[in-house]
Length: 308
Image 1 (tube, rainbow, N blue to C red):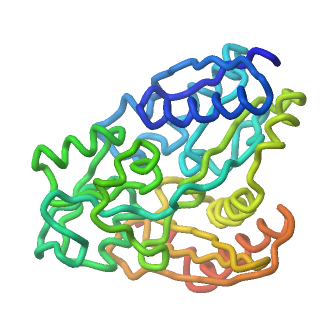
Image 2 (tube, helix red, strand yellow):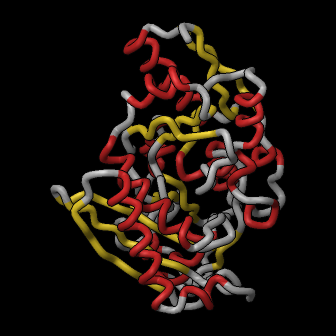
């Protein structure tokens, strides 16, 4: 284990994240860490939305294959891109402290969402963002936007959009926080489950590496993410579901807020739920997320999740 290979996507943000993990593991444990850059199907298919071509799992499958074949021992992911249920034989060994979880409003001409003129073109391919943007501004023209972070910024700069919405964490990590014109309050635009956190995936049988990585997990972030991901898992979540889930701490209590849009019509009114509980372990965190999902179901989520 003195020599560890990290499988990573080759986008600038993914490489930053992998380099960050490499630096921490080298400094803390003296590990010799190398990177194995890979291009995933999610990176290759840019002309269709993820919900139509297989979901966010397209960003992790090739990395898991590298783990399975022994070409790498560890994969670093943006946690929001990790499917709610991993394939048999794989586990998340650690969740690292969350960066800014908010969504960011990015524009070259407008200071905020409220400043956009009627009919303004806003770029995002996230169904979660589409549903919440239209709840705030039903007059907007929401247009698809795929590609890595630099590609999305370039498309904005070329004039294809009046504004785009991105994760603040990615912009901050790459030193591009100055591009953020405004950050949405998490109660106004609820983030995706796990947004801003890093997930470290390994093979289930890598017991020594799992034990080592477990020492690096940030439990406050881990428990919050467990609650968020439990909402989606309970509802059968995928990226074809306009679901938002964000948990934040108030002392020992964890407050979770969730919103669900209609899978067939993102202009339908959002379903909302919020609740809190004392959370001191993983089981309590997951129970909180399951209870939030139950509230959405009681509010009519089953009809929202059905065929259009």
